[in-house]
Image 1 (cartoon, rainbow, N blue to C red):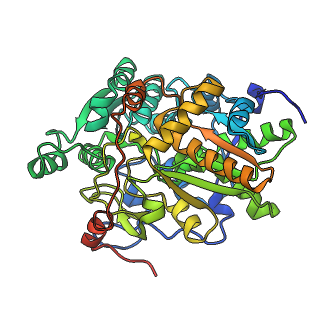
Image 2 (cartoon, rainbow, N blue to C red):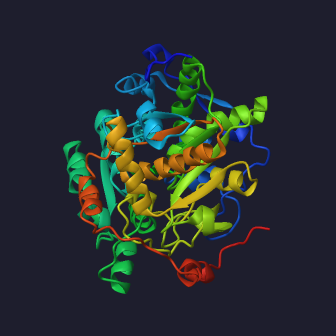
Length: 455
């Protein structure tokens, strides 16, 4: 085996096509439904929000979708991203498991999010769109889309979840540096925001609320479109450049993963690292386990229900077949702001329902403990979101140690934590608290749902 710690690819090996897992899934996803008629949505229903090329990608069943050269040219700023063997982390854990990580923190925005931000901005530019609106939790998506919109000359409005707006001021500064207008959500700029503030003037906000505001702004302005950083099929497909590169890098290492891990908010980085490997499961009979690591304070995959639900709090988006805690669920203000979302994407939800992937939930103290161990051995300080994946890796590596079995584990280090040091300060000072949801709290918002159930 090649003992090199860092495995690189050349620019020529940036994928030329995205992988569309919908072509290989044993069971297709159920269609999204119109929020008013409850009938399957068509392209004309989505056209006010998205450019037609993205709508085509959303519903496509083609296995491979060409990546435009203009997009690949921007990808070259940071892609291919490196893959590392975590020798020192393995030694600290005393595990026979081999641990690899794909590092997406090398992008301009410091996370995996530009992988979809760039093509989304490009397709909007090609359709003549002048302005985009979006939401952001921790600010990683907002900063990525700000970077992409600046590159293609598109104006951008970002509705940033209030708790993260206050916790992570430098993400806000990044967005402004790239020319975006950033607002603390809920705002008084939209009917959705004003409704939430009337009910709770001190609302900490949520991704669902921020989505409502961004969608409303786009829907009311013919020259504006909406852009989403996770959940939707085309978004997860754009992220498969991660896993496609990782397959080539694992070949160079002379290894292949038994387990692939990604943290989970809406599904973008988990899908990005795992879908190409799941495709090998479906087409070639491989047996890779794919684990989605989510926060215990927002456990839609491990504790939610599989049913139709809105992607936003107010109920403006199509109804999506998803594992959900209810679109009115307001997560606790944990520092992993990018994982504070009530639902999961349709593809990931179908894969989980079919038992083709796994989900595990972790408390934030366990995650930060794993993140600090990783930083002290590998040198990179992970984003709070990414520490959930590391916690899952620790769990699987220690299990391998107990069993005396050698496993190969690959995880996506989806971003660095250099703008999240206040979270680490809170951890070191003992100010981080665990949020234990009662069964009543978990099910309260689900009981309010009057959306279609799924057999």
